[in-house]
Amino acid sequence: MIKKTILSGLGIPLILGLIFWSSGRVRSHPSPTVLARPWFNCLTRELWSPEKKAWCQGQDQDLLSGSSTQQPKDRNQYESLDLNRFPAQDIVGEDPKTIALQIFALPELSEDNFQEQVKVSIDNDQTAIVVLTRIGLADDSVRGLKYLLELAPTGIPIQPPGTLAPQRLWKVTWIGRQQLCQPNRGSQDWTRATCN
Image 1: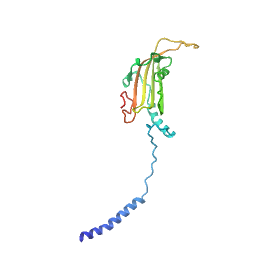
Image 2: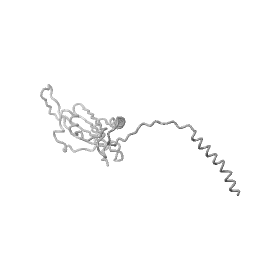
Image 3: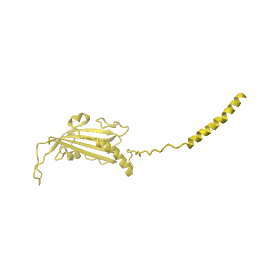
Image 4: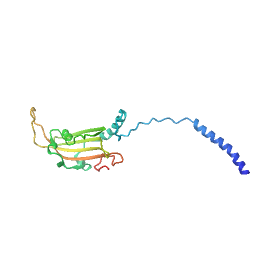
């Protein structure tokens, strides 16, 4: 009987305390709403809204802006490609940028957010360095590719019809490649390692 009275005596204040506590929580001032920046999944293949396209391109622009022209001493950061796998006529030409774009012609299929950047650096007409960076590839494992091309003058100037001065021909002497993997498919930094 004593236990029943004690429990009954504690029950009413306990219930009233819970009511006041829960009503106080309901009446408390709500925390300020934080407006979150929208997030989009840039790996989907549907037609993108202008907002999603702008957001995803901004994400990839950070990767492109980090693509500085590399010097030959950075070759060890690239996977070396065999020049024999490219047709001889593709690795010689008048303009280093045109040569790079000719060797690595654009893939027919690319994502809606595909971006390309080409940087050319010519050192005293003795060496040309081309960095070709592509982001937004239509591939489940590779998100981007970066090529480093080194070119040297051939020593054989040509004079195209209708020009006054002979033009220098450039020849590719070395090509290296890095890749950037899709999320959960490998490195999220430029690397020579393959993606899964």
